[in-house]
Image 1 (cartoon, rainbow, N blue to C red):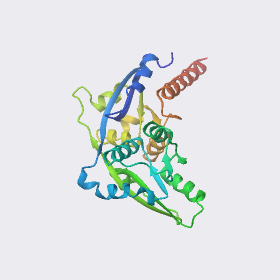
Image 2: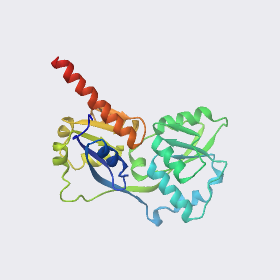
Image 3: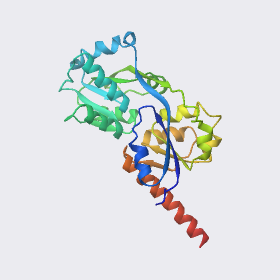
Image 4: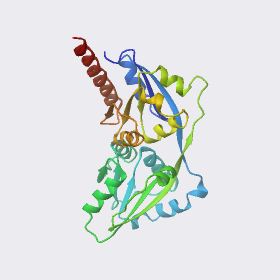
Length: 263
């Protein structure tokens, strides 16, 4: 197998599913998961506005969820306050991973509108609405509010409310980012935040530029490119199987190029 023996560094959150590593192990690779951060629900005193909106969700036309973590914490808050998701609510999500989480937490419910990034989602919603003005709410992270600037279409009124935040995780003594990167054949980033939290722990981008970098989803790939980093391949679907195929295809192609050059 093309990735047999390859060391793959998987950068993500503390609660990242082990299925990614397990799938690579089955293909003979040697993955290492690097838990750089964790997502946590905001304390109750910072959720008063969000809870007030949750209790009045039926007054809104649509709801936006832009991350898998956002879906999980939104579902948790609904359970805590014994609130039912209104049937009339239009659901907009960013990315396939978020859509999968929505279906997992709310069986039988699917996203009405989906896009690969938040700005494109707003454009889609704006084009599809028939009303002069619609009222939407976006439950998200503190970091998303700080980093993502949006142009909201004139026919949408959008409220963006933070319900969770990201916290850097202390690393085990044997998990030294620079050493892991130096020893790895490829680095897989599972989210835009995984890129930021890794860069916070290493000195500059030069070490990363010496490695093949892979992205889970277009948002992660776009974030890497904005930072001036080259993306070798992007996984089309947020699944362990898709990641395995992506890495195999890449290393197969690279091997063929080497053989062709030598021939």
